[in-house]
Length: 500
Ligand SMILES: [Mn+2]
Image 1 (tube, rainbow, N blue to C red):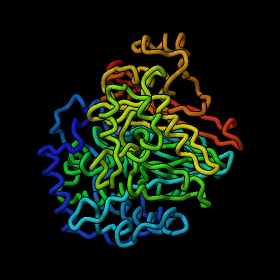
Image 2: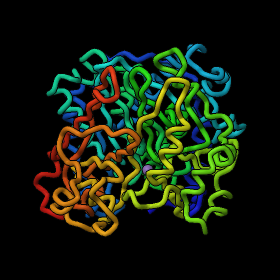
Image 3: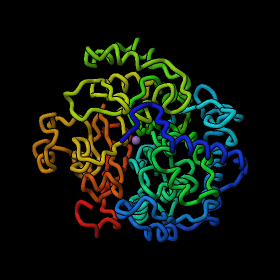
């Protein structure tokens, strides 16, 4: 379930937010700690600690009051990695003003980890976009939502260690990268283990590993959907929630991954016509950043009337009232950020633009094309979208396709249709020609959704036990790019009976 309104202010959420504020008042975030891998457990030790944990699916059958097991019994271990990550963000590629299109944000605000937009006195909320331009022949690895599933994450890293891509936490091959597509915590019991693993990857490979900001990378969401509660159960008064809330502000809401002049928009949710990346993509540095600043959705609609015209005529005035120029104050305020939320239609015949209460805008094939075309720079082109944000615990047309497609779905398949919405995997793979093999063609203008990790309600509700990641190999021309899909059964789930 997603919040029905933009600001889900449950009683629990309010109480946890209060703790969050008090938590910061009692501690300082200013401590500067540089990363030294010898001060942290090795990947082998970390893997052993994690695989010993019971599966989320087993915990789902137990009472909510059961004490949570953790591979990180001491919060100081997490805090050490968090502070080292802050230091890495402050001294890495974000430090150089030359890497910021339109100006580097203020050191006294954006880079001041003693302050936050959610604390008093507040600093501005400053979401940003990133470009990651890699050489032709590079490998970029992608994964969708983890939602606290550490077993899938460890299985993925184990497989990459076996393949020689990783050596422990360190990327071993030149020109290899990892991009995570958001929603790391909430709804599963190992959010802190997942976040810590991400930090270790980031610290070992500061300019090759990047995390996009999903809709759950938000203090409001984690105070409502389980992650803060998980940490309070595990650490009680030792927990410093503001450290985690502040980390998210260093995650870009969108990462344009590309080679030469071709890019893929990589983000958690959907399209955000209020930000156009042309200047960022044309900028000289291979890794560059740009603050979203004022989000100009209203201006976009006026300039590109085709977007509104692609919607149901009866809904156009309503849609127009929801896409406005505004300055973001928080991820969901005054309007939701379209990169962090928003969705895409499943079938090519659906409208170019729609709206679902509590989920935001739903982009169809024609609406997406309009925004992708407007995202071009003088030379740069945005060829498609890699995203995640799927977590239905019940079988629906989207989850059917994600499971039948081995964890990666290309929207608007040519031989699929609304009439086949509830078709079986056999029909989807046969008659509907749903792509499900390891090698996937990269078609211009397409949107690909990565599945949510399986040790979860979603895996149980949709009867799958495999996790999926994608490996994109870039080439000189976009036509030479290759996308390989790796899916594997997660060991901890193997012995569970079907439907568990
Ligand atoms: Mn999501």
